[in-house]
Length: 289
Image 1 (cartoon, rainbow, N blue to C red):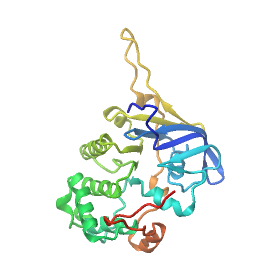
Image 2: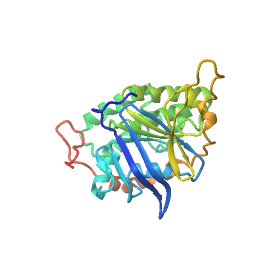
Image 3: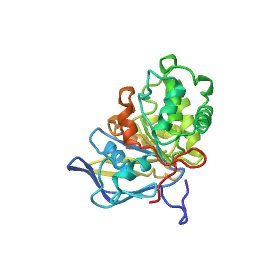
Image 4: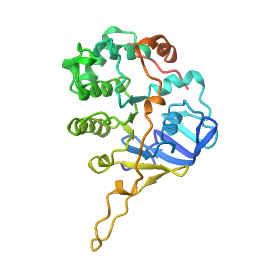
């Protein structure tokens, strides 16, 4: 995506030290992510990829440097503001994280109610919209175990879109899928991205970089730097694919970084995402910052 001075980044880190507990894992992170950007984060286990995600969702504190995510300053964010920050983001897990004792429709309804939606008609309308967007509106009454892996991932993508997020965080969304199904999922995520939603994807699949181009951040040696492919003159041998310049990225599951909605933890989830005041259209109203 081409940016101009009038476009504000959705996510911005400058001179930011990324922490994992008490230890600094990445020093001086500098990155601006804009609406419509598609950004891969790659690197070996322990290089700080997951810690970046934890910092973005305000699970890890930012104590040095500057960080702004969806209008919230991470250095000064209040605990009561964190649920509202997270509603501006959607998360796609590698292993889907669907509630297995509920239908597809009930899975999505639970998330909406946990994030402050009250009006039944508005809830039903939004569920139908997101399912139609991923081609799964005919599966609303199915149980997760009745769906294929690709279908379950499409439901997970629909869930991530419920609150119309400004950015999607995707943890190895194709990791458990066969090549053909994975390509269908990537086409869907790419479509969502082209409609204006930024995507940040943790992955080790080097083929994705070539088939679905995007920006690439490489975590290595306590740094996370953007990899830029250099163009070769016409008379030179063609450059090696960008993926060859990137170290093998064995990724830690993002599910460890983001709170998981489990069937036996509904009270905890509802507490973590308190009901917001509802507007006239039945959707949660965001408090003034």
